Length: 604
Image (cartoon, rainbow, N blue to C red; front, side):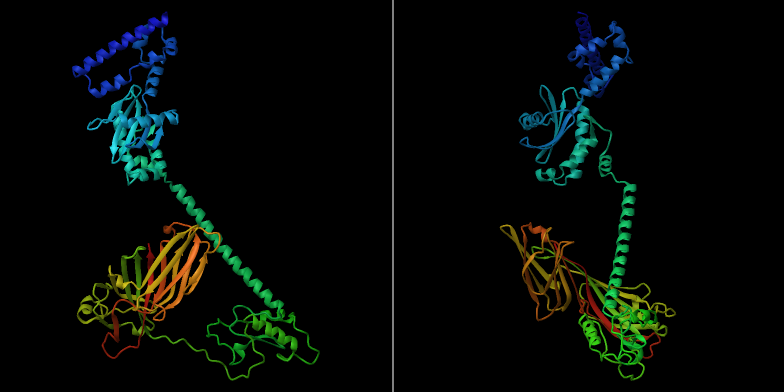
């Protein structure tokens, strides 16, 4: 009886409060936003759950209604807010198919699918409203191309806050999904769910912006990056130590193997060794038949430290007084034959001394002018040229300090579409008028012993005829296998050396089956790359092909294809006519080189 009286009293108070709010709004004392905010927080939930809350009412109704700090009033306000929530944030199709849906209250899958499936039937055509209400829920939505961004809320929620929340989500979705279609939404479904969680917490809007949401999801950490850099540096250091240790172990094994065969040949010796009564000695230092110290086999070393080990060799001990004669014993010949089979060099007997050998010095011209071009090409796998760029450099290397003051006379061909640029210290006017590359300040000189760039050029084009090497790749699926046919066609303007075509492959257990190849091939299992190589492409083999088989895979798995090569011909038609001193008297001896290198060459 007491609970019924308290319930009737509360109902009457609510009606009076609503009338007062409506009058205040009509007279302009409060605005519509304040009215909806207060009205939406009206304690209607007490009418539903009065069995629990009626026991918390004080005996005096007036003291409860006028005391905002009373514990019962605080619990009541918390309960109101907990009921004014967003039930779900979803992205659906026009037919009601759910692509992404994030629920913020406990709700079964059947329940949310039923709510989302019923929404398209409630949306009227030709109406400008952005919300639809039913008996239990309210739909707040916004069309995004062929989809709907939808908020499902209860009817007690604040419609103004729901609209603000919907606008925030409509800005977040394009940030993570550039293509607003069904496929694009499904690809970034988890990213959208994480973003919705940052914008809505327990059904209520968080005070965040789009920038804040992106920052929270990225979770970039300076400490994490620093930790990863430290870990990577330790890994690299460990790899270097491992390589050094492996190299040392290989050297020790090689030395032991040679000792077991009755000889000991250090890896740094400059020439073949012979064995005499005094131990080991270097033939390159005893006669003209050996290799000199400048022959490219390294510098000579002192072998006295190895004499005790030579005494313990497995060669037969000769009889006393007979001495040792190299090349006379049968067992000695067998040992030397075994060394010969392993690729070691030896001499059967002491060669006649024809005088000390004179090292041949490498002849270097006093001035070297190098023309080098770097090529960057991107070809389309379906045919056509996407980009083509050539960057060239003329560099000057002077050996002698006396030749540092000089001028380079050049001749330029047609060179259409080429862009030339001189070094800032070069006299540009002299170059444009007379094709002479010289320093602007005649009192200065070029550096000796260091290559110096004096001229650069650049070419960009869309002409496919300029491409030195065309690559065509044709993957096709046959049953459970992919048959890949790849071919090349080289331009007649270039002879290409050291050509390597690297084709990416899907992860394989075994090597691919190569049915036919013009040239050589190698499979790198670590990088899962098939390398097709040819030492030279000239007029005898301007075209070639290869066919291999791998397990069935998508055609995109075989791209991009990388190509590397070199050539002694360059694109720019430029010649060096002479090199003269700055004084203009006489000429200087020089040599030149031309080289075309690949910076980036891909088929995508």
